Length: 397
Image 1 (cartoon, one colour):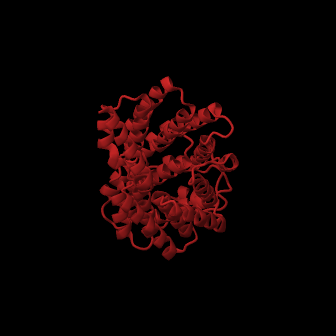
Image 2 (cartoon, rainbow, N blue to C red):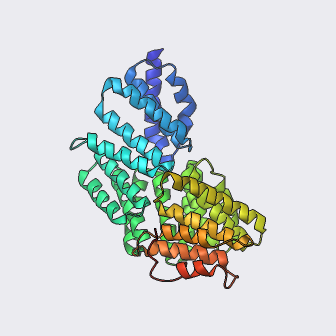
Image 3 (spheres, one colour):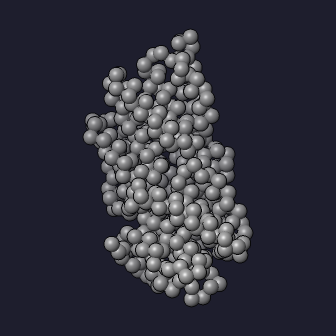
């Protein structure tokens, strides 16, 4: 019986590697892996099963159980003392903490990998990449690029690591409004993702491509890229990609087709297991304002966005993208609630402005604010002065 369970686990791993992982479909193995957990007796098999089950749970946005299962795998591996497995599990844990909004904790997990690793360990590049993503999330774009250089120098046997490094570089280039560099990096990363049948990564490349084309005011190209990303999210069933792509589409349509924007944003809010759905609620609020669907519904959406963003910022106060979401939500509340002040929104936006050299972020903030106050001349003058000028204002304590 134990031998049968071990063979079943190997089959599950092979199936995941060959067919499921690239589609973001590891979650389909969940019930099978839960059953195997009660049948496996070999210590190493139990570690493998717990690690794969954690990934299956995480792909369904069940991050709490995924973290708990990764801890189980780490505890089981303590008796085996397999360092390569330990490092891989630590990287896995860091990723789940990041996805759950705990950026500082994620960075600490990645740093632990670097402390424990030796030259040539395959997880070194992954850990440097993780550190880079954490730094970028908190506005340290130069530090992120330094860590990406470290990741590239470390090398990795994982065929997609180079593509993920390129995608991370493209994300920084988008924030800096380096259009050609971002586009070139995305083309290379997407080609590598296609070559490895990594459909979720390919979809993320399309989503970022839509964002950079939107910043360049190329609506048609942005729409085409965003629709490819949304379709990839639907095909793979990946909640994070589906949510992000629909938010991107909604953002694009705010100025051209507010009804369509409302449809996409509303669909994005249904992926509510992750607190990152805050952005979807904020954009839904803007779409409700643009469609004159009723102030009460818009206030409800903005309030939910503010609540979720505030929760994320309580975990990691330096996340400037979440500050932008909070600022937009509070701007919407100031616009719609009689007697409300602009000051809370202004404070959030000022904390969202980390550097004067990220014009991509400035364009994004301005475009969303303009969509919110369109047709309301003179509305929210303090925020207008802050968000519509160039260069961006320095952050305030």
